[in-house]
Image 1 (cartoon, rainbow, N blue to C red):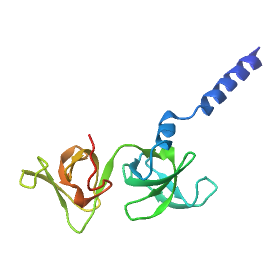
Image 2: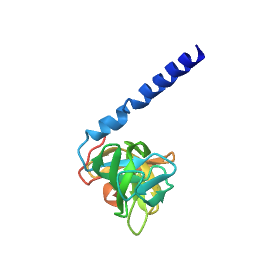
Image 3: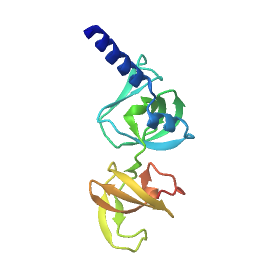
Image 4: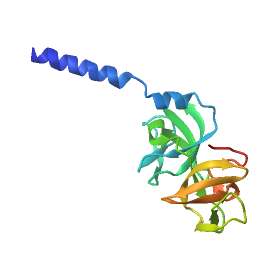
Amino acid sequence: MTMRILAAALSAFVIVALVPDPATAADAKRSVPYYASISATRARMRTGPARTYPASWLYQRQDLPIKVVAIFKEWRKVADPDGTEGWMQANLLSGTRTAIVRGAGPVELREKPVSGSRLLWRAAPGVVGRLSQCGNGWCRMDVKGQAGFVQISGLWGVEAGEVLP
């Protein structure tokens, strides 16, 4: 009797484990390239689309923006802000849009998406923030609760003419 219960429980577990993750399935239908971000606190980039391939990088920066350039099953070929390409498991990535400040100097986060509006913050190169409300060359960027509008030209992780709600 106990063995039957255990066998039934194990078979239910196997069935649940074989159901594809809806987020990964939806992600696989997107057209590439597209931007995403690293959701894990530690994520390995590999030289090929399987765990048997050697790791080329270990990322320890959650929310780092990446560009997905190819899809193979549950693997995504990605490019990081420095142009390094490799493969990551889809479950290490998120659809949350983020960007990293690029260039020699800081970018200005303003109250409104207009050059003359009040300056709220400055973000140094390398700072990562979450994006929203992109359009007309500006995005609202939130860096751990400090938010403002920044010109897209100072960011990596969003295209010049891109619009985000």
